[in-house]
Image (cartoon, rainbow, N blue to C red; front, side, top):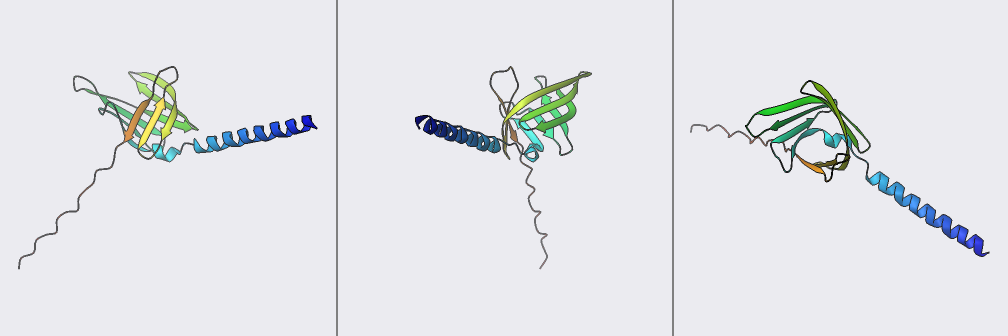
Length: 138
């Protein structure tokens, strides 16, 4: 009888852990549409990345002597894995990183083998003010 109780308790515990793991996985799903837009690096605002809805990626960075360098390529987001392929100095470079956070305003990812994460913030569209009403003569 004791063996049966321990078996049932063990099965309940395993079921609870599995349910918690499934719930956690659902909460970690990354919405790929949130990636679309223009992003600037939080700590280095001279670095700008753009992701388009058709899978294209462009990155620009202003370096010390005010020269701007850039690279164009493609990206693919599968689960939490973001793979970017770009042409850099005539060489095709592919890098995959793990997306830790992707919201409407924040992108945080980690490159495998590197300590720490990289944070980007989404650039807000410019607010165009309504033109002034023309003055009428009285």
